[in-house]
Amino acid sequence: MRPSPPAVEAPAELVRRKNDHLDIVLDATRAVSRARTGFDRWRFEHCALPELDLDGIDLSASLFGRRLQAPLLISSMTGGAARAVSINRHLAEAAQTLGLAMGVGSQRVAIEGAADLGLDRSLRDIAPDVPLLANLGAAQIRGREGLDYARRAVEMIDADALIVHLNPLQEAVQPGGDRDWRRVLESIARLASALDAPVVIKEVGAGISADVAARLAEAGVAMVDVAGAGGTSWAAVEGERAGDAHARAVAMAFADWGIPTAEALQAIHARVPALPLIASGGIRDGIEVAKALRLGACLVGQAAATLAGASESSDAVVAHFRVLIEQLRIACFCTGSPDIAALKRARLHPSESVR
Image (tube, rainbow, N blue to C red; front, side, top):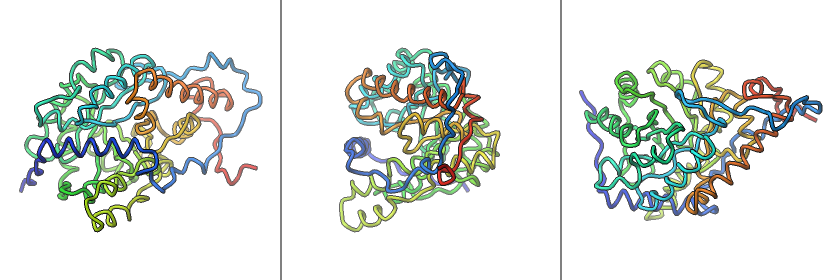
């Protein structure tokens, strides 16, 4: 028996919801998870004699056959609101300038609606040399149209891969959310075998467990973004949007729900060491980027932290990531790591054991 197709939300309602999401995430006093990422539990052993040229440290990496100047992903952020046109343009310009990967927000509105809202081939024109990752929700790939949606999402921006985001908690507390999550794994496996592009699975801030990651690896996915707890809480976002006290109370109870980013990363890497991982979810600075890489990530993503800058200009996004890159470079320097491969072997201790 096939799962019933998800209910189609009216485009105007969907766009209104996306605008609400932007407003709430841009307000630094709202929707921040009370959970901690777990990176504060770890500390690098300082190397007082690095024997390195700081400016010669190699931060380069690669993703889906494209070279990156640093192992960073401008992570999936927004899709659907008209102002996303300028936001995505600024992000793409910054990604090209710095040689970073970029994941777009959900393309559901662009596929189902009349306007692409900037999610089109112009992004590839702006960022011809960097990995671009398309994005759909699990609900959009479940039905008979799932493969067609996925192909259209990839073709729309000439993407190097497709992100399928898992957000069961957000859907559960969201009015009109997708409540039937049966056979999602089956749909992912079908997509991974049929789509002419790698499939990346990510959560949206509640984390992915080692057990789920192992099932995803068996299903044939190319990469997993742990997207753990400690950054934006989408349950809290929906709580802020709630139209009545009942809905708000239900959603806000889950504001700190999820697997902390560092914990998810470490557990998945131990369970499925060959599975490439992206670390995202509350990453604050280049030191935490370095810790994430040491704990098993191939790539580290930031989303909400760059949104304010992306609303202004590409220069603001570039400035933000230049700080992150310089912090990462110094972390390599002070652990005696000439490149990212060496950083992945640097000595990292539980903080309580460091005096």
